[in-house]
Length: 137
View 1 (cartoon, rainbow, N blue to C red):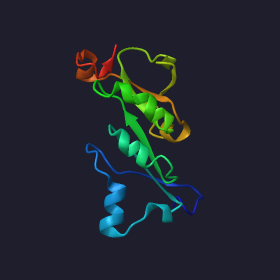
View 2: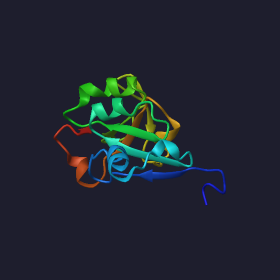
View 3: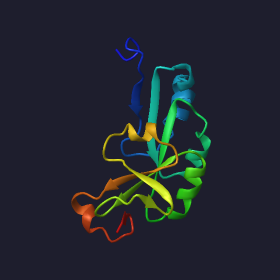
View 4: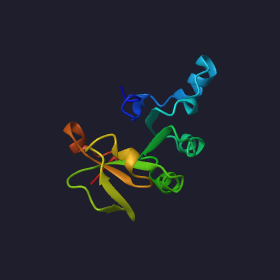
Protein backbone atom coordinates (compact mmCIF):
# COMPACT_ATOMS: atom_id res chain seq x y z
CA UNK A 1 0.00 0.00 0.00
CA UNK A 2 2.83 2.40 0.87
CA UNK A 3 4.64 1.73 -2.43
CA UNK A 4 1.42 2.20 -4.35
CA UNK A 5 0.97 5.62 -2.70
CA UNK A 6 4.66 6.52 -3.21
CA UNK A 7 5.36 6.38 0.54
CA UNK A 8 7.73 4.44 2.73
CA UNK A 9 6.88 1.67 5.16
CA UNK A 10 8.51 2.27 8.54
CA UNK A 11 9.74 -0.72 10.53
CA UNK A 12 11.02 -0.62 14.10
CA UNK A 13 13.22 -3.63 14.70
CA UNK A 14 13.93 -3.46 18.44
CA UNK A 15 11.27 -3.07 21.05
CA UNK A 16 13.26 -3.81 24.17
CA UNK A 17 16.61 -5.16 22.97
CA UNK A 18 19.60 -3.42 21.43
CA UNK A 19 20.49 -6.15 18.96
CA UNK A 20 22.03 -5.18 15.62
CA UNK A 21 19.22 -6.54 13.47
CA UNK A 22 20.55 -4.83 10.33
CA UNK A 23 23.73 -6.90 10.64
CA UNK A 24 21.79 -10.06 11.57
CA UNK A 25 19.36 -9.72 8.66
CA UNK A 26 22.23 -9.39 6.21
CA UNK A 27 24.32 -12.20 7.72
CA UNK A 28 21.62 -14.81 8.26
CA UNK A 29 18.90 -13.92 5.75
CA UNK A 30 20.95 -12.19 3.04
CA UNK A 31 18.54 -9.25 3.43
CA UNK A 32 20.25 -5.94 2.68
CA UNK A 33 18.00 -3.03 3.66
CA UNK A 34 19.75 -0.71 1.18
CA UNK A 35 18.06 -2.65 -1.65
CA UNK A 36 14.58 -1.51 -0.54
CA UNK A 37 13.93 2.19 -1.06
CA UNK A 38 10.30 1.83 0.04
CA UNK A 39 11.32 0.46 3.47
CA UNK A 40 12.81 2.55 6.24
CA UNK A 41 14.00 0.99 9.46
CA UNK A 42 14.39 2.81 12.75
CA UNK A 43 15.53 2.08 16.26
CA UNK A 44 16.67 3.49 19.55
CA UNK A 45 20.08 2.53 20.95
CA UNK A 46 22.25 3.22 23.96
CA UNK A 47 25.32 2.10 22.01
CA UNK A 48 27.26 5.02 20.53
CA UNK A 49 29.27 2.65 18.32
CA UNK A 50 26.05 1.56 16.64
CA UNK A 51 25.18 5.21 15.94
CA UNK A 52 28.61 5.69 14.35
CA UNK A 53 28.38 2.44 12.36
CA UNK A 54 25.06 3.35 10.73
CA UNK A 55 25.36 7.14 10.54
CA UNK A 56 25.45 7.13 6.72
CA UNK A 57 22.76 4.51 6.09
CA UNK A 58 19.87 6.13 4.21
CA UNK A 59 17.38 3.36 5.07
CA UNK A 60 18.09 3.21 8.81
CA UNK A 61 17.58 5.92 11.41
CA UNK A 62 18.96 5.49 14.91
CA UNK A 63 18.09 7.64 17.89
CA UNK A 64 20.59 7.57 20.73
CA UNK A 65 18.89 6.92 24.08
CA UNK A 66 20.28 9.15 26.80
CA UNK A 67 20.58 7.45 30.19
CA UNK A 68 22.16 8.26 33.51
CA UNK A 69 25.37 6.49 32.50
CA UNK A 70 25.89 7.81 28.94
CA UNK A 71 25.22 11.55 29.29
CA UNK A 72 28.74 12.37 28.06
CA UNK A 73 28.08 10.61 24.73
CA UNK A 74 25.07 12.70 23.63
CA UNK A 75 27.28 15.30 21.91
CA UNK A 76 29.05 12.60 19.88
CA UNK A 77 25.70 11.10 18.87
CA UNK A 78 24.53 14.53 17.64
CA UNK A 79 27.85 15.00 15.83
CA UNK A 80 27.09 11.80 13.88
CA UNK A 81 23.68 13.18 12.91
CA UNK A 82 21.59 11.19 15.35
CA UNK A 83 18.82 12.51 17.51
CA UNK A 84 18.97 11.83 21.22
CA UNK A 85 15.95 10.75 23.23
CA UNK A 86 15.85 12.10 26.76
CA UNK A 87 13.19 11.81 29.46
CA UNK A 88 12.25 14.97 31.37
CA UNK A 89 10.21 15.46 34.50
CA UNK A 90 7.76 18.28 33.88
CA UNK A 91 7.64 20.54 30.85
CA UNK A 92 10.07 20.04 28.01
CA UNK A 93 12.79 22.68 27.77
CA UNK A 94 13.50 24.47 24.49
CA UNK A 95 17.17 23.39 24.73
CA UNK A 96 19.11 20.78 26.66
CA UNK A 97 22.86 21.35 26.99
CA UNK A 98 22.59 23.72 24.02
CA UNK A 99 20.82 21.18 21.78
CA UNK A 100 17.28 22.03 20.57
CA UNK A 101 14.48 19.90 22.04
CA UNK A 102 11.40 18.74 20.11
CA UNK A 103 8.43 16.80 21.48
CA UNK A 104 9.35 13.14 20.98
CA UNK A 105 6.04 11.97 22.45
CA UNK A 106 4.21 13.46 19.47
CA UNK A 107 5.07 10.56 17.14
CA UNK A 108 7.96 8.25 16.23
CA UNK A 109 8.05 10.14 12.93
CA UNK A 110 9.76 13.03 14.73
CA UNK A 111 13.01 11.10 14.58
CA UNK A 112 12.78 11.13 10.80
CA UNK A 113 12.04 14.86 10.53
CA UNK A 114 14.93 16.08 12.64
CA UNK A 115 18.68 15.40 12.80
CA UNK A 116 20.84 16.32 15.76
CA UNK A 117 17.96 17.23 18.08
CA UNK A 118 16.87 16.05 21.50
CA UNK A 119 13.62 14.11 21.27
CA UNK A 120 12.15 15.12 24.60
CA UNK A 121 9.91 12.60 26.31
CA UNK A 122 7.84 13.40 29.39
CA UNK A 123 8.27 11.11 32.39
CA UNK A 124 5.20 8.94 32.88
CA UNK A 125 4.04 6.60 35.63
CA UNK A 126 6.80 5.46 38.01
CA UNK A 127 9.39 7.42 36.02
CA UNK A 128 8.02 10.65 37.54
CA UNK A 129 9.65 9.59 40.81
CA UNK A 130 12.93 8.38 39.29
CA UNK A 131 16.02 9.30 41.30
CA UNK A 132 18.62 7.33 39.30
CA UNK A 133 19.45 10.18 36.94
CA UNK A 134 17.65 8.61 33.97
CA UNK A 135 14.90 11.23 34.19
CA UNK A 136 16.15 14.80 33.89
CA UNK A 137 14.65 16.99 36.63
